Image (cartoon, rainbow, N blue to C red):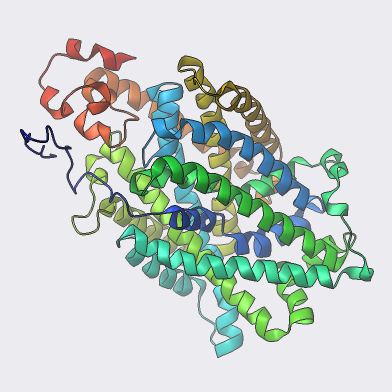
Length: 519
């Protein structure tokens, strides 16, 4: 139980805070949070893997345009998202937003759904790590290691870093991300300087691509790249200046992602020629960008790019691990998941139990895949990340509706445009995007329309959401003191969000004293 600091006659009541229930404050500046957010997008992984796979699987050339369109939709979403951010200083962003903008049961559903989505993304990336590093060990050292050995090596690195001070992860990601982004820009410039047929074309950016059959797949592929743009709020409790860090980081990260993805995918089509990019992607696969780099920049820089592909995946693993651990921490702290998850390390104030739980879960999945002999690329990386990205888009749509609901009940005195008009437009765009991705989900995961995965993966979110709502309603009846603090974040420990003391003191009180919680 948290211990309240005694009142000082000179200073008044001190903050009720304990290292066991609080994240480390004032640890992250704007650059560090930006590195976390962009790392979750894994730019090199998207340009090398998702873009080439998208060209080859769909046969569509409008992937660069898909990034632009999806980026605009998400930018509109971010206007209301960051406007509401000061009202939700919570390491579990989605559940806090939905709790405040809609209701607590749906907030719990959003929290559980986010946990499922981020776990899917984080664990799925281990398959990509093995795929990226395997060829390098084979070509450079003549060692053909099993994929699970490489995945477990990465798992050990992530597990250790996840238990350290959050700013250590920020420093690691800063080095990886700056180098990774520089490589993408360098490769893209090389493609544009050496265009096919000596002509720089813009066919892949033409709006006509949006009106071709299967165009919804373009948005589905783009969603993979933007996963993580929303997580600045997740680190708000550890930010030095949350009110400034969250909006600046959110728009800065999203803008960087739009530029990198659009530039990389468009430059690739310029180097091959828009009419040949699909055929070249099918022929070379994820090696296409390195094949082009080898022609125009030499083998050394191409090899550097391969190394950065590995570090891109590793950076994504670290970032997703931290986000998933903080969602577990947030839900445990509010006691909508087991309370032990809401504890932090006395040494680092990192979400220790959430981090360990995340590592154990990932280890179990990797061992199961290793013993079963399942494919690490398609069945681990592609399926798990596709499911995770769909879940996050679904939560973005739900949150966009919650933002509108919040400002309808709490009108902003300074800007109706930012707090209502743009959020309504964003909510419409997000809901349409979910519908388009769902309609093309089979193509996204690369299965037939009659495959169980076609509807099975999206249905998991409905099942988990329904169970979460039932659990929240159960809490409202049997533990109203817990229900009352859903969505309050750090205030859930002290009850300050309701003007109450520590909720634990009300454990033996009749539920009549908690009628406020029954909303």
